[in-house]
Amino acid sequence: MKIFNSLTMKKEEFVPIEPGKIRMYVCGPTVYNLIHIGNARPMIVFDTARRYFEHKGYEVNFVSNFTDVDDKIIKAAIEEGVTAEEISQRYIEECKKDMAAMNVRPATTHPLATKEIGGMIGMISKLIKKDYAYEKNGTVYFRTRKFNEYGKLSHKNLDDLRSGFRTLKVSGEDEKEDNLDFVLWKPKKEGEPAWKSPWCEGRPGWHIECSVMAKKYLGDEIDIHAGGEDLIFPHHENEIAQSECANGVPFARYWMHNAFLNINGTKMSKSLGNFFTVRDIAAHYDLQVLRLLMLSAHYRTQLNFSEELMASAKSSLERITNAAGHLLDLVTNGADGELTEKEEALLTEARKFAESFDAHMDDDINTADALSDIFELVKFANITTTDGCTKAYARALHQELEALCDILGLICDVPDEALSAEVEAKIAERQEARKAKDFARADAIRDELAAMGIELMDTKEGVKWKRKA
Image (cartoon, rainbow, N blue to C red):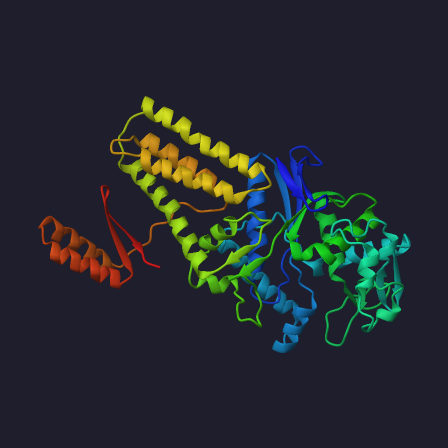
């Protein structure tokens, strides 16, 4: 299995630190509002990567944090007249609801930054003791130039970075030994949450939070660190510097980063009016549609979001669910008995789609091509489940389809919905009208149901229905 490593800028054979086990850290959202669809992409992508690792037989310790202390959280708390903790707890719960709706599995651990302050103070103290950090008037800075490998992830040159800084210094910049030094701890401001430390009453810098949480729940050296490409610099670069200077070992062996999400070809922005939360999308679509769209492109390529592409993803998902539903009907209504010789041969052929699926996923989690394998299996199932096929054959095909969909976090079986007594009565009346060859009445009832949002389908297994979008 190969993974593109942002650190080396090439695909590398994946070899875990400990055979059979993977330690994986994914940067989670800052919880000051409902999550947006840009947040959703890494959640879906790396949940899928985790599912595939587990499919391959790995035991995955998957850690994804919630940043629950931040300027944006504090600002939202002040605007509402509540505590920062109230804001963060509210939106952690809302985030978990959206994750569940996207079929993103809970992490092994979801650490909160505010619960790990002691560990942050400990790591900062260690960095000061090793002369990688220094304190000025209560603020603690990291000595960036003292870490010789700074810039190895972002592939930035220190001198180029330094020349790019503004000449005009912001408050506190003149206290730094170097413009590139970054904050590990800062004094509190009026109305902000704060914790006692050896330097002042204050709070941690953003970067130190993830270093400490990764160390506590995964160890000094981890297999995979992942997140959006916008985090490469400075966040992930600073994590590397802090962690490797404090712990004395490489921080992460493999770095995975997903590309940006655009809206109709343009960067998502509130000022442009093209900003969508996951909840906005859920008002119009099943979030399985959003998940399929996110997986329809390779995670390292930019993904465009548009109404047209969502409509296309919805149709694609329906191809899968309709095929699964058809197979389940045959499991109930197909012929009894064991697999025929012909069906045995067809199943052998069908399993080649799973082999192709694995090959594509082994190539840097290529979900776009893996999805193509699922659609090839759907096409194969639709063609080969003719009249008279056995229940056993339909069941085996359904299991193949369900297994591949589950790796991608796609739910292929749509649960039956309860119909109102009125709708059920109309469907029954239509059936009677068809038996009596009163096709005008049968068509009229179909139109009445369509107006109520119920679409009927006459199949060889009987009448079926679905709700219209």
